[in-house]
Length: 560
Ligand SMILES: Cc1cc2nc3c(=O)[nH]c(=O)nc-3n(C[C@H](O)[C@H](O)[C@H](O)COP(=O)(O)OP(=O)(O)OC[C@H]3O[C@@H](n4cnc5c(N)ncnc54)[C@H](O)[C@@H]3O)c2cc1C
Image (cartoon, rainbow, N blue to C red; front, side, top):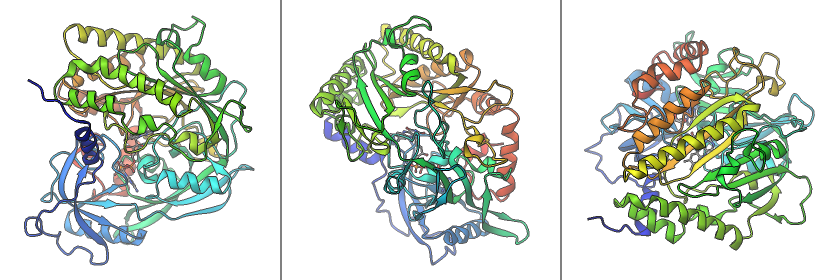
């Protein structure tokens, strides 16, 4: 017999997942680490990742105010045999920060970076019209994009939430959605790849063999050692970066809920309103496809210097409140599914689609226009906290429709097969976006290194002109059979598209038990997907941190 779970419980679960809970445990039960640097603020805190699947109670957390504090912490950790784990907003899924079972007895100190948030415009970039900004690794993306906007600058594509730290997004080669539209010329100072491809230089706390101590050191983008630091998975500690920015663009975002999935994801060459046709027209597309529904929520952004007459101007981000604040019918169904009524997945899919259609109309948000960041940021921490898998399928630009068609066909068939057996492993949306790769030439820096561990790092053995189709499937945490289902999806992607890489921050390496657990994917498939660059990057990170201050057991297993 299942119990109904109220909207309040779903939202409370979200708050817990966001890590808002502070521990009241006694100091005696959890003593301060020995000789902890007196000048660095610290307290104990419960760690919760985004979906609340990874919890570490009562962990000592330091809050450095300067890069020197981080150096002090690193040398203390080295002396005492502790590990330091950088954390920004904790808005991720994978065990990159801490692993399950970490507690106050583990020799681990979390380092909350968010006071390292200074930003300065540092001048023009290498291409006329571009700019450079120096920013602390703990600064939030929303703050950075707002700062750039005030100065007349912006980025081509960004992750959807604003509550992500610069250090956190660079660690995992964060992406938005953009490839050149037909005839589009890249704006100076911009990339179609990940944010890691915007780095001109960075400062990291690394081992200084001469001094026999950890020290802050600056790395130019052309320094071969920079390659491994640009997307470092948290196996390094970055304190500050200088990023490229382009001219501030105005974007239009049109939402469509009228194109059937059968047409959007049709076989290549079918004609009609295909995913590829929207991509060709504007280069910036996202499909959100709720399970067991016929029509995805398709967002189509276009660069539009002037406001189109039908577009509503917006002056701030987060313009889809119906998606950021869970509507009651959706929360109620989600609560009942969490309570065990898994067969309500189709009803939840339909409720989300209905809420989207109604919400777009009620808030007049189907056609919006404004400064780039106000259209690029559209996810708040109040949204439903679900589990997500994530992959980047790298194919020639001409292969995008084939990828989405094949994926949609596989996903639908497996969803139906599971449902026929009374199994509903997926109750959240599929999300599809497309980006370019991390072409270092886009920085206009001679000898610029590609981010070695980025899913978007170009593979020299592949032809130029590849793009990445980013695929995510969402489901409520703990949904029965989701591990088995996601394992099938993963195996399909690796088999159908050998260019597939995992999305570091999300779920991958599935077994029936869940994510990050398939030894073959961890030990062989993922390293092989990076080719020879993998070993070189792992060795570089080891050289920069030979005492392994910046690591955890999961990274030790993966990066070896
Ligand atoms: C709802 C939601 C939507 C998302 N949407 C997108 C999206 O559109 N595009 C996208 O690419 N990603 C997306 N993400 C993933 C997100 O970008 C990553 O999880 C990101 O790492 C989170 O940033 P954070 O500040 O919360 O980092 P944390 O979760 O705190 O840390 C993540 C990793 O970064 C490391 N790290 C943090 N700071 C530093 C530092 N200074 N130096 C070195 N390592 C550091 C940590 O040790 C850890 O390994 C989304 C996540 C959520 C929850």
